[in-house]
Length: 318
Image (cartoon, rainbow, N blue to C red):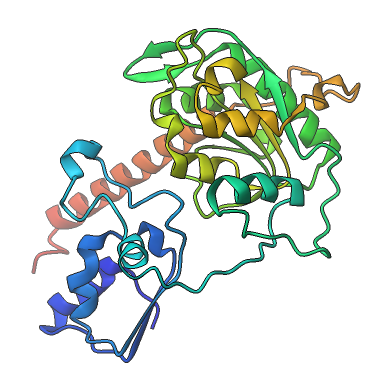
């Protein structure tokens, strides 16, 4: 049986009793809140197997962290079990990242125990690169934006797309404001995904560009210094992980300082094979998303209107 927690609740409501099973396996359990424990135990499983990574982002919540403290929503069931028992079965080999990327992730978050098999084929010569961009951040609509990084990110995305036409490419950022700016800048025809770091957990891409956003002389980087968020941000790429940001600001945090120290100075923008805009790149990602929402809304209106006609003609409600 494959299910979600919501479907389990619906099953219980419909049948008047919980589903009873012998073994429950919870995938991505690092995102399963501790507060879900009673629902899982109501199934009376003999075996409860938790699969996930408590070093990555915890369960998503719309409430601020200080309101979540002590509620069971601020940490995962997996993290509770790991901290309580200390006995876990660790997977020590990864098959996603270039070995050089894995080494940084492993040293920062896994005590050097995460290894790369020698037969994993990753060919990037400079798998981790840093492009310096010191334009100042701005706060708009309760989110941070750094417009100085936009053109650099666009240029890198265009180079990757031309040089690797079949590769998966993602642009990640930590702030919704920057996400919106990027989505308005990148043509949808390039086939590049634009995501927040929090939304990309569990995903992987051949090439990843991270727009760091934070840039100030005081070294303030807010929740970007959260170790679990950093772990997700730097571990999505298979071939190459590229950062665009202010290394001085980011290096105020010791984890980011280690990341910066292990990056090569940006190489890709020196390439002559830059995709030049010809004026026919088509609509941006934001425009395509907006058109899709409009089309969906119009379809719902048409369906509602059709349902209303049926009711008025007496074909429904009898």
